[in-house]
Length: 359
Ligand code: DP6
Image (tube, rainbow, N blue to C red; front, side):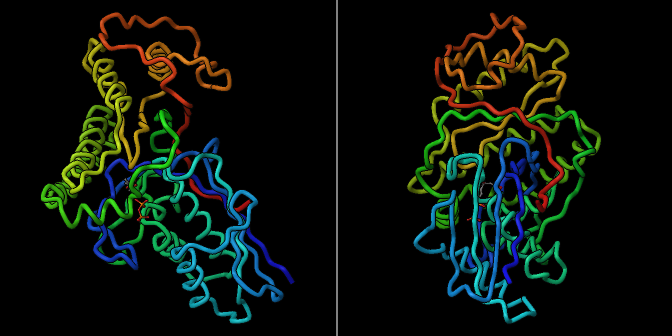
């Protein structure tokens, strides 16, 4: 009598960051946020949930290894599912989860993990209003996961039900690409959960940030609507910097960026200046980690990749993107920055995705 469902979901990258909760238990955010959900291609979480009458407890396997216990948040999600499930025969659940990329490295692995868990559970137990239920379950697992429940451009509202919605589908801006540079895949020094709480308690810049977010979101949505990359790029980069400034204003300070992050920031601005029409070619954003997510239109991707190859030479033969890059010799002599050999652990070229799927 065993039932089982598997769901695959991908991370999302915040264009306007979520930072701060007004309710820890329900994970109600202090501000609206906006993100792009990645394509399922290279980076995703796969979660299988099963239930049968013979199970005597909840179990969790991560990468095939049974964990001694479920995290509090995972337990909270399962308790909420049992509360909503009509069929009270259903008692326990086995969760098997696998990520194709490192957890806790600022790559939003909790977002894809909880989104895939929430959708799989909603389906397994046939819960009512599946979309909003899955979003709710994902959110109480990890705030940013509420945005990975949908594809395309997604807004998470800080008012009303505090759920997410797709504001533009993946087809809206198909030529947008994402280049993820992994400088360091080790665990971050302070979790987002702890850091944002500390920010609320100590940062005065935080309140100033909150008063600017809605206006930025409206301007960004307008830029996305008309595919105005210059405005898009500026708003995205400024929100990333503001978020990291707020982290720095936290006491004790939370510093996610490193030397390589700073180098990439300088490199992107120098590269954008090389365009004779002064149109921007690339934008970066950083979540709670040193690894940049770069946005670029397809037409500029090869040139930017060759720039990255020039400034971050790698002798890592496993690196597909570096190998892929055609040897266009861009002229980067106007860019006066040091070459950082072996700074990059990995580079991923991807695009916007259409959202999770049941497999
Ligand atoms: C910097 O969603 O990981 O990535 O809700 O406590 O699980 P919890 O935090 P989490 O925070 C993500 C913060 C961020 C910005 C963002 O994704 O919007």
